[in-house]
Length: 250
Image (cartoon, rainbow, N blue to C red; front, side):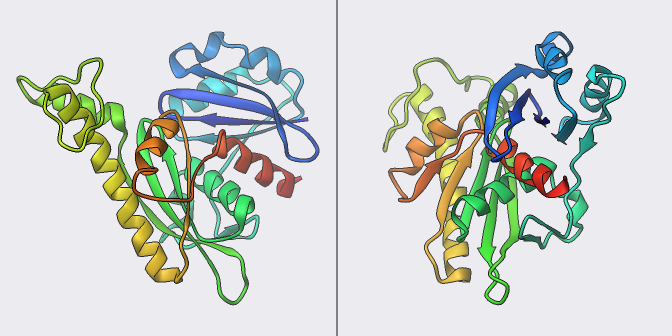
């Protein structure tokens, strides 16, 4: 049985993969509680493990410690092409493993141009096109920006009187500080997505889908729906991409 693990900056998610690449028994834990989580017990039932790790060596070391003695995990490194998706990053192996897995999952969902968003501690907004000759997916490039909590934290840490409080809501013309912060931070994200979408639409002459995953996916999708159509919230996009990659590697 293949187990796939998505080790993000704040949380680690994992799932078992069935023969048809469907995910089952999905769970998650904070990275600070990884060693005491249920993952170690579940790893005893796996014969293959594929990991996308963007949390650095400390989490990689913890994951290695948790493995059964006879199980050697594979850590995903992006390549020039995987699962019918071409990687145009200048140095393909330096692309975040989570971004690569999410792009592959998004391509196999629709096989058409898409903006692929991972909305976690950081937010990545990636452009996925379609090669006119091979009809394969092609990763064109993308952006990285602070996630919502980092945006809130930047204001709290670097200003005297701007601290995001509970109850802030998005408004067209905010008239209190909490609403102004909530709206400003969300507008920054929405604006970045809309700009990337328009650039991809121009490049492909095709209206892209917006595929979004991650901890803040639902909240951001609600804001995007006021400006864009074709917004899809995809649960566990990174894990699904890992499942597809794992099947190709077997």
